[in-house]
Image 1 (tube, rainbow, N blue to C red):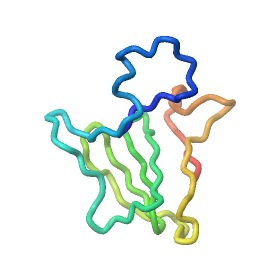
Image 2: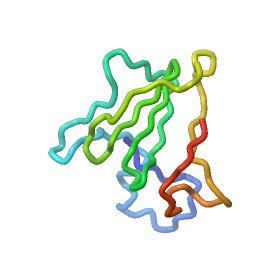
Image 3: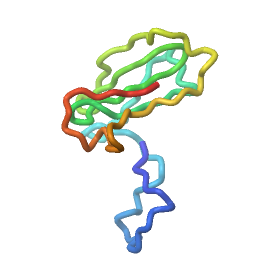
Image 4: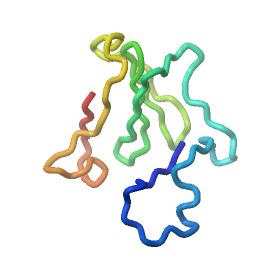
Length: 118
């Protein structure tokens, strides 16, 4: 997992509060045990992930060949593994983004339904 701050940000005070940003750290639970996302046979080459849900607690992962998995970030459990209605083998490096309305980010809206574009 990575907490990201753009290197192009106009931040004048780069004090200790940014020490843990832009570096990979292990994803751990509340007891500091590592969380492993994925199953033995999952192929995550070219995978894309997006955080969403009503409280930004769901991690949506799309990966080869036409699979999608939903992981609950609060309980650290998979909710579902399923197939998308198309085959991505020849489009392995796809794009998975939130759909915004009127230029507003998905996270900032108070709607109960969210759209994601693949």
